Image 1 (tube, rainbow, N blue to C red):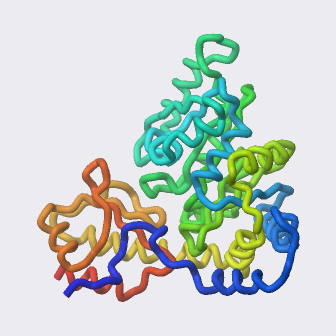
Image 2: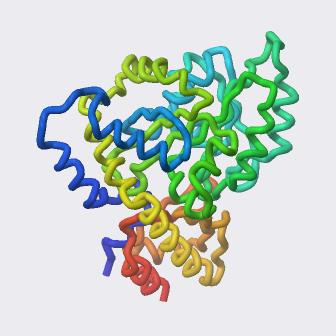
Length: 344
């Protein structure tokens, strides 16, 4: 019989965590200032300063696409270029939003195994795009995804090595952190070590894939905090400034409370590790990428993929022919057990 619990399509298909729903209800009991001028928003920003061990400015958004596009719009002018991996979400899955919000900023996709930018590839492009050459769009931003689109994690050293290559240019480093908590848990380091201490100027911190109803945060670190007002202006002009901002802040408030965001990511990562081991043990199955977060990419024999789908397992066939399974905070042991039963 099909098992409705075997939903491994995406962490965006998962329900919101009850604690965050409760936080929304608590935020819905009084009249408070609009557009982020509320005490909840201020409290979350203060908490983020503690977590990241530095001064910062925080702007809330309702989607990862909005946060990425808005962030990049204050880093890269319309005549500039943004370097990213060819598989990056900003390049493949945001329908030109970064180009739209930057007013024409050129995305230049780079290669590298497992959706991580190769250092030599980055060096080559930086060499081919010199400063002050009128015929090429100058590099004004480097975007790294962590987790990557292949579910792999950049280490602090890898981030630092890439951002260091921007030295001597008026360029900045952006991190798409839609699954930042999963990468952070995998690396076992501090949030600061994986971001500003490694040269990241702006982090788009995603909560939606990790328990939120819909909440993202654009975090400007000290190197670009002076661009916060411009970021707000672009948020307003782009129609992404939520009047009742407290409901976004409320989700972050509960998400960050007692390190819930890390606990939820750790749970999702553990379930992914167990699921990957189960799948990889099957004859003819190979992992397409290392499992370093909550995403598993495997190459399944066609008959096995059919068997799993007939049993009710839901997962995506990726463009490269692999199958993607994604776990979340809501993935239970019985979901893994049901898949095990389907394989037996």
